Image 1 (spheres, rainbow, N blue to C red):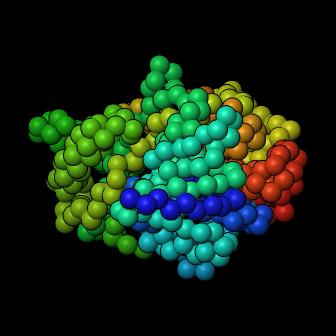
Image 2 (cartoon, rainbow, N blue to C red):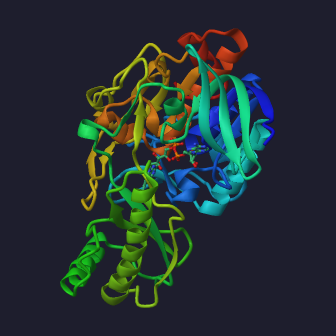
Amino acid sequence: MIQKTHSYDVVVVGGGSAGVAAAVGAANVGAKTLLIEKNPYFGGASTHSSVLTICGLFAQQEPTTQVVGGVGQTFLNHLARLGRYDGPFRNPGSGNVIVPLDGETTKFALDQLVLDAGVIPRLHTMVIGADVDGRQLRAIECFHHGGPFTVEGAAFVDASGEADLATFAGADVRYGGNEGRVQAGTLVMQFGGVAPDISIHRHQFTAAVWQAKRAGMDYLTKDRGMVVRLAGSNHVLALFADEDVNGLDSESLTQAEMSGRRQAWGYLEAFRQYVPGFKDAYLVQTGPAIGVRETRHVSGEYRLAGEEAIHGARFEDAIARGGWPVEIHEPGEAARYQQIKDKSYYEIPLRTLKVDRIDNLWCAGRIIDCDPIAFASARVMGTAFATGHAAGVAAALHASVGRVAAADVRRELIRQGAIL
Ligand SMILES: Cc1cc2nc3c(=O)[nH]c(=O)nc-3n(C[C@H](O)[C@H](O)[C@H](O)COP(=O)(O)OP(=O)(O)OC[C@H]3O[C@@H](n4cnc5c(N)ncnc54)[C@H](O)[C@@H]3O)c2cc1C
């Protein structure tokens, strides 16, 4: 098969929150930028696993304070234009500040965001290899149904969520945190037919799961999950079906997807029987894919520690703010939270995004170099927008001038509306 080669200034692998922000940030610098995504739409976990609440664009303090601007704000502007954003929402129970999404508006808003910035989008394309010459990543190998092809770039961003590109490039990566443990995977369930006039109380779902388990449904993994009503509808999203999954391994993923779907039908039955207002509920959708919170992390030039995140650390080369609490999910257990000092924010240094020993490769999103506690905060989508934006700007500066100073990245990010 004849291989065609394409050349760009900046190539971004992965079109989730981090990858979209990286591509737009690079294009805003003037770089010819390619954004590669294996799914048929952008958004990563938001659109492909129904993670429909953005955390981390705002800190948790009162009054509400925005900590991520730039491409994150441009995305909010697109949502607003489509009639789906009129400000953040503070959860009355937890006090945490989120931005609710819906899947279809998110897909369309991200298409517009990417096209408006002049990014060249390439969906349905899987990156499967890399060509490295010393400390330089020269090109990546891609695959679509037409066969393999090669893409050359002056600089690259790995926003794959699984550190695929860094791994192919031979960079130092590690699976999970302490002793290779990773956070739980969860198959998100969407139920319709929920009575419009009932309020959602967590304890009712926990009690329903206990009753269902007593009646024999012992395969339900979690009794204290999250249920949120989708604005203006009789649909709810429910996060209960946890799986202990290795997101790099198709055998493990297959087992988790099938077990998760079995759980989803079980939860439907439990809620129909035991939760008021759920008598006529039905399963609208699972996933589509199981949500994988964690696989590999990249070794950067600096590893952000949980202590630094919790105590609101500041850095001279800060390129992003993290304003979401530490949020840890162990399979089958309720989420554990720890607030950032003063419910404010910590800073993320550029060095956590710089892939060690590959001069023209940056990483972004949930794979940046963090210990397990810092990861448990920095992984959320709002923060991924911010680290993606910075990685894209750094890659574009590298492509144009051949060297990257943190002060220049900060200056350009501020010019593009980032909050630093
Ligand atoms: C169940 C669950 C609930 C969560 N709840 C929340 C929440 O409420 N709010 C919140 O803000 N965050 C939440 N998170 C965390 C958040 O969704 C992720 O950490 C975030 O999406 C990370 O963004 P990312 O861009 O780094 O990765 P991803 O969103 O995972 O995007 C990576 C993209 O790269 C693509 N890709 C991967 N490999 C390749 C390849 N080789 N070639 C081409 N494309 C590739 C993938 O298809 C994907 O689109 C949750 C996560 C899970 C799993």
